[in-house]
Image (tube, rainbow over all chains, first blue to last red; front, side, top):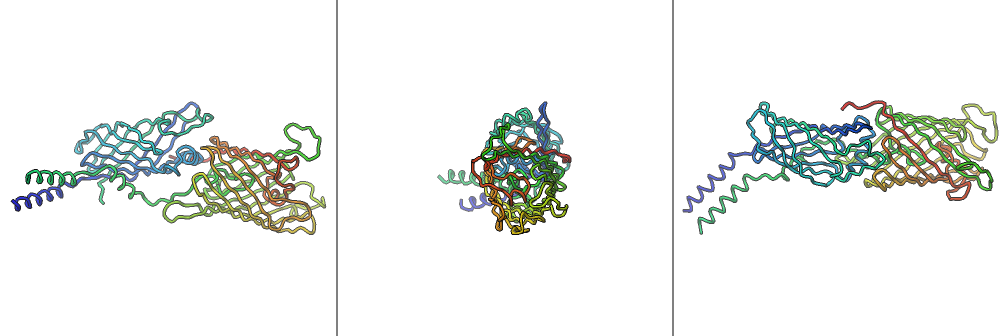
Length: 181
Length: 297
């Protein structure tokens, strides 16, 4: 009986080593957001977004520094970080979620990514429609979604309200490679 | 009994091998961040704290057009002008040649002075690895005093010049609070009397406290080590509010300084700071930023 137990333990641990979860990382993901109003159009881009996809459970996490967003007009960068986002207090925005029904072997697919977006310490449940393309061993994720400014306690003073949209449209593009630890 | 134990052991093993939580992944991501310098921004937000210069420079290609105004009443006077007895204005521009170097020039009605300056940002306070605790900028100003000089009227160009050099040193303590120290050296080609020196040493102190997203409280004081002795002079002091509205920055201040050029307000402020007529000066500055070079996204 003891020998059977030992054999069982050994075989299970070997089983564990064979099924190694594959992780993919995007180191220079791009996120850009647009605010369209009749008074002014504002656009910013962040080329330093990090993300990891874990194929064992279809989990995806995204992390970015808010002060890495670049604006066409440089003074906007100061206002964005000092007055609106307050990036001294909340330096990063993160996303934790799952790709629903992800098929790792399909060439092109459109799936819903469901999870929590955390910005300025406030967490919001979001569902984002994502196009996933597989190229050799790399994945490309693109898509767009909307952020409601009010949801994250971003205070827009009435005097500038006509220049900043209440709903910001956001686009993303991540290219993933195999993650070698 | 033994079978139950086996079952739980197997399920625990399976569970521990296959679970990779999202929080672990986020922690892994945090370690993958490259070591890009994180500099402090918005130490003072404006390029002048209130009456004097701050360490801030605008980024390359930004042109600032500035109108600075001071209003004060005269003691013992019955002048019934609108708003105030006396007013003084300065019109200036500032252009950021590079991210670190700004040049500027201006014209002031009081003393009819023209001045030009350069401000160079030597060091920026850095947050992450290779921390630098201070932001340091160098400021050099040349000013030309156009109006009547005491005691003599016939003074040629060279003798109407003053040179101000400052080392501006600032530290942002919290997202809301910053302090600056400005050791200053001023050389004046002219002097009001023979007993006054031509070279002066001064020390400026300035601070900013953010009271709302776009509004901050600022204060400055300048101490002169070897002041002018032929007339009464006092240290320039200012208490004010800065308000940012998109590309327009407004600064309101209560001060005793009537001049808006460094050698003027640091050296020749004739009255102490209080609310009496003749002492109290109300000032407001409007700074408009134009982006002549826009970044490609």
